[in-house]
Amino acid sequence: MQPKPTFVTRPFLPPLEEFIPYLEKIWETRILTNCGPLHQQLEESLCRYLGVEHIALFTNATIALVTALQSLRITGEVITTPYSFVATSHSLLWNGIKPVFVDICPHTLNLDPTKIEAAITPQTTAIMPVHCYGHVCDVAAIQKIADNYNLKVIYDAAHAFGVRDEQGSILRHGDLSVLSFHATKVFNTFEGGAIICPDAKTKIRIDQLKNFGHVGEVTVVAPGINGKMSEFNAALGLLQLQYIDSAIAQRKELDAAYCERLQGVKGIRRLNDGGEKVANHAYFPILIEAAYPLTRDALYQTLKDHGIHPRRYFYPLISDFPMYRGLPSAHRDNLPVATVTSNQVLCLPIYPDLEISKVEEIASLIATQ
Image 1: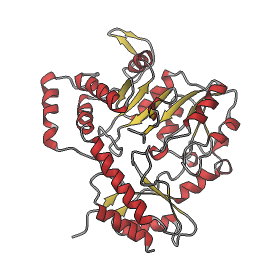
Image 2: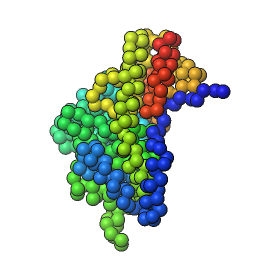
Image 3: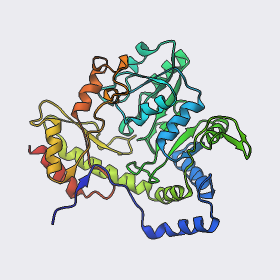
Image 4: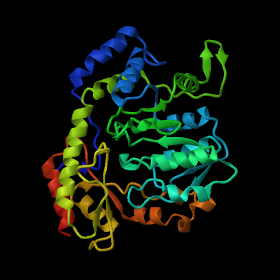
């Protein structure tokens, strides 16, 4: 019998029997969507857990990004990273906005603040950084630039659920932050997302936009979209939230095990360290450098041959895709760090029910090539 494949991530699912009372409540109320009682309860619970005042739930993070840009009336050009999932820049195109790519920092793989100012033009209206793998951007430097040039800042915080710095949640930074609750994320509702709102007025506008622009039964004030999270997904979120601290603790243990076993392997650069205070351990990325005996793609195939399925995340760069590669900012000469990183990165499996023995097996395979 073939061993069970090990994938880079695996959704955390609480016990099925604990979900039944939530289903019974949905059946009892007959409210399936349109910001019902479970939707409202999840918003309140997430505000408490994340340490934020206002949150608007969405059917997914891509629609949330599209709506966040619309809510701030962003136009023209937005400076962003080429090293992310395509939803980041797709949300710009959906709003008729031109992405302007700048390079990333080699240590954090986040948008490099020292590259931003040179990319600003009279058409620039905002900056959209990504907290890559849950590692915090240089929020102070980015905000200083935004203030100097009167730009908005929208953080793609898809990877950053529960991440904090010394002052509290990193989601408080910028004008808006967007979370993903996709099945691959630390906290998931199968599909889902959210916008962290700085005040009640902003939340009201965003709630209107995610409900077609309705402000009443017969009044529509904006070209909104259907971005509402269903009661079913909200119920999953409420149940998941009961287990989230345990899930993150298990991820931290696996992260530390990888760090210990890969330490000193020549040609392997770890981005994580097991003692990092701010991470939620959403991913375990490594960079395969020239000193390693195999190329990144050769190691990727070797692991797959052993039933282990890592992910080259993010590869290719967003800027390499056909709808972006014609942009002047997408040229690889403009993005040297992102280009090299995209060809070196490999995210190893990490999820709460992954066994330490499997981490040891994966690390051993990498160390003995």
